[in-house]
Amino acid sequence: MLRGLASIGLAFAVVVSGAGCFGGGGGTSSGTGGGSGSGTGGTTTTVMKDPSSYAQTAGAAFPYPQGHASSTCGFPVYNSDDVYAAFQNWKAKFFDGTKIVRPENGNDTVSEGIGYGMLIGVFMNDQSMFDALWSFAKAHNDGHGLMTWCIPGGSGSCSGGGAATDGDEDMAYALLMASKQWPGKASYASDATAIINAILQYEVDGSNVVKPGDNFGGAGEMNPSYLAPSYYRAFNKATGNAKWMSVLEESYTILAGASGPYGLVPNWADSSGKGIAGPTTDGSGPNFGYDACRTPFRIALDYCLNGEPRAKTYAGLIAAFYASQASASSLSPIRDGYTPAGANPSGALGDYPAGMAYTGPGGVAAMAAGDTSLRDLTYTSLWAYTTQSGMKLSGVFTYYNASWGVLSLMTLTGNFWDMTQ
Image (cartoon, rainbow, N blue to C red; front, side, top):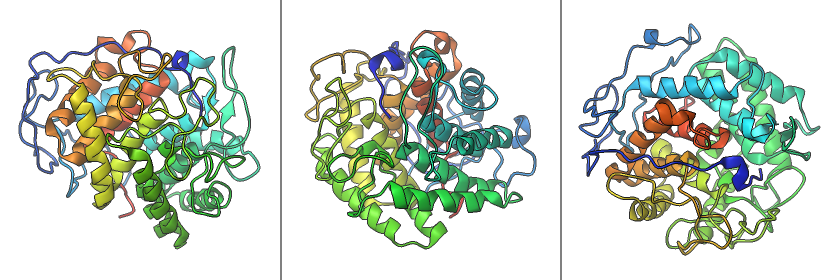
């Protein structure tokens, strides 16, 4: 999905006073484990409240919060109220009862946002929101069993047809999770299988390269931020189609070619990993920008959920780069775009402080890389952005930044995992 700087807004600087080096729980934490850290407002002990503390769908297999332990990734000190408050703020601003809207883009809706909402809904155990979003997606089928990527709103909204692979992947994974979260509704599993098969048929080319959509791209034009290897393992398990493991292997081959010394993959690339202009018109295609910033999240998941060493290697690259840009107490020095060599690109990209779409996935990568300082600082920053007064400032809580802030908070607290395992 394409986006410009105007649709993202500018982030303001959150400085965590007294965060310093803030220790952090280096080992796996669940419940009240995890050691000491900056937490929220000086919290030094994880607080995971009983599910009865939160409004959610009754009878779920995994009611929020879970604090689902990872054998490879340790959590920061956290409070389950933080994630729930962030979720409620996000839902209040972007869910209109039927769909996720982008207020800064004429209240349009993109399939990417439906996917984000379904992921948030299933892990936060909000079945009514989940069902509404999935119904909306099905009502806007593009003819291939996939959602049309753009549903226009008012002035300044998106335009165009066809499907976008990242949104389809997120919806498919969310449906798989829903089949386990709410097993009483059998259609989730069959719907998941149908969309997984459609992705493989229309959004993967003959050389196992993930295309950016069902009507364009392939080995000559792809989007590295759409690569989701942890999903492909789940898709393989759900369908029994081993081709998904070939897609996974090709994805890691592309990632290795695209990563460079710092993990700053391009927004758009060919299957060798070389940056290209792609469909962008602002020159940002070969640089690490508002598409590529999601890559650390999707790749780090495969280490935290599956122990994939290639994912840890990538996470180490990008986490080290982010750590080199941040200060001891603030993420605000991190910019909203870089060249693959870590420089400021020409044009507007990289001229502003990075928002949560950058820093949230970077924190998840830090968790996979074992960088407890960057991980903990990210958690505290996301908490401030999503739950405190800063959330109301223009530009900070935009649809895109806010969505990645909430998804990252969920992951940093063990509330985003593979329920099928």
